[in-house]
Amino acid sequence: MSGRLAHIPICVLALPLLVSLTGCVKTAFGPNIGILGYPIPVSPYFQKKAEDNLWEHERYDRVPILGPITSGGPAMALDRPSDDEIMRALEAARSVEGGLPFLHEIQRNNVRIVCEKTADYVDPPRVYPLIGPAQLHHAHYKCTIYFSETTRVGWPLPYTSVDEDAQEVVYIDHTHLHMVGNVDGGPGSNY
Image (tube, rainbow, N blue to C red):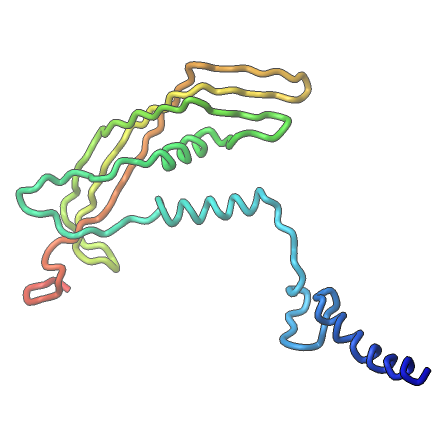
């Protein structure tokens, strides 16, 4: 009987320790950040929007600064728009990204993209703040997207329409800077 009673104080001391290790009960150990310590659910719409904004900022919203244009060499743009950039521009132009589930859904299948360069020119040198002397290189592209589009409407009268020969035209501009002058910072450099 006394052996059984000896286990009770040990169990009473071990129970708070075990409960605090589960993570379900707030303990007094460590820093306390108040209400910010509890998870707040975020809608997938807002999460996808934030991820898309970050993706476009990292990939397409920045203007790269390249080295100087070599004398006698062609000043041609090297990169055409990627398929991802073209499809994002199409979604932004139409302002409907796939539609609303069960109400108005849009699918694009059999996508084929034709990209043509319409203009490629370099501006004369000028001084840009925080950059120094540089030339702005422009490249304009006309991107034609051929696809079959399936539109499903679920309310008030459900129906499906298929456009086998849909096409859209998106114009995309690529710009980047070329440094001018001695960019190494040696004798005779501008900066």
